[in-house]
Amino acid sequence: MDSKKVELIFEKFKQSNPIPKIELNYTNHFTLLVAIVLSARTTDVSVNKITKELFSIADTPEKMLDLGQNELRKRISSIGLYNSKAKNIIELSKILVERHDSKVPTDFDDLVSLPGVGRKSANVFLNSGLGVPTLAVDTHVFRVSNRVGLVKEKDVFKTEQSLLNVVLKKYLLYAHHWLVLHGRYVCKAQKPSCDTCIIHDLCEFEGKRYNIVDRP
Image 1 (cartoon, rainbow, N blue to C red):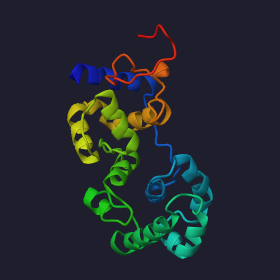
Image 2 (image 1 turned 90 degrees about the vertical axis):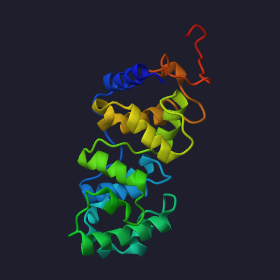
Image 3 (image 1 turned 180 degrees about the vertical axis):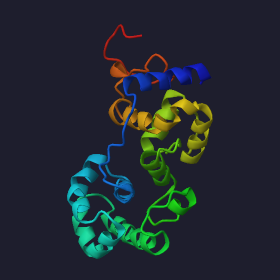
């Protein structure tokens, strides 16, 4: 995609939502990381339903360890992969206490070494929790960026690297959020809402769907 068109896309996102926020609820860096781990293959809405009570009693690694894996598993049993997520959260809490003075590390390599924290989760934490201008590629970002033509890649890692090359630095802090929200509410997987899309005139997707006959 032409660089000027890329800039126009993100400028439209910025004008529509100048300071987008992550939709997961959290109270500190630890609860943000836990919420991110819980959100794997699960909607933010589902995660927020269980974390309100969970974080009221376990908002530090020590408190999470006191809660224990069995009790944690019960409290998150309404979401997918809750068994493995409970195990990972308890294990990462133990590592934070033993190796990081009970604090979530700010180094990417340290983050991805934690149980349940992959490349995407680490980037989400760095971006949303610490304001690092980086770009996490989840299913929404992967779909939207390749569908509209920002990049043309076959896998998540190459998509991340290509986006980092084409997105101007002035947009990078919020680029992940704009793409996620656009994919979640407008450019949906099965039925993209092209009629309400603010970048429909810039999008290069050949399968655009319009309900309004005279829409360009």
